[in-house]
Image (tube, rainbow, N blue to C red; front, side):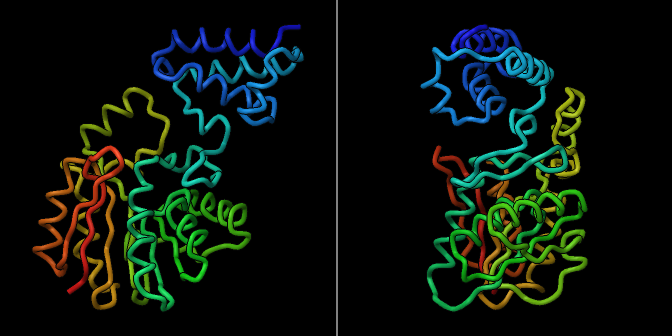
Length: 282
């Protein structure tokens, strides 16, 4: 039998030859082997000299083949860490990105400004990563999750049960169509890729759901509708926070200012790139 170190080294070499994982072959191999052996990455590194069973070795190389066919590591392991929490993910939802932590931190800072109970809407919730992270961090808030995809909402509910031990209210809705009431904050990470970008990704067998990516010719179709519709669902001086691509934030800021929003602001992520645009309802 081979040692864990030998199998990990062999797996890393295979992934180096694959364009999909050429940037992070060792990390990908380590995460996948940890998953197969059901141990932490730290435990894996400490177990280098240990022997690995033939069945575990076979399982590891089978899952490596899927990675080399462009399957995201998170879909293969059915989990993704976000803001220190482990979320279940599958092909029905986008994989949570570290970029979205900028939206989380901005929302937390705003919500902590007053002590009264707040009601939040997470529009286009997907896996529920944003809403669940906020609720986990600030248990006193009320938060609802909405999405057009029934399958995505099932993933969201599952993550609620796993992480919070309870389900948040979920609403199947095309943006605001089935939303009732008013909120102190609306947060959203909507589809914002252009049609051209989405078509290119889909032609290259991108595994994430296209409906969660496609935002129209300029990527702003959903964002325009959100900015137009949100004021009817926001309390006075309530906030709208939108995550988008770097080059869209200035346009979003102008859209907010030409509508019913003031005190608009663009928030940069940890890399210094424009990431979140916010405004207050006038």
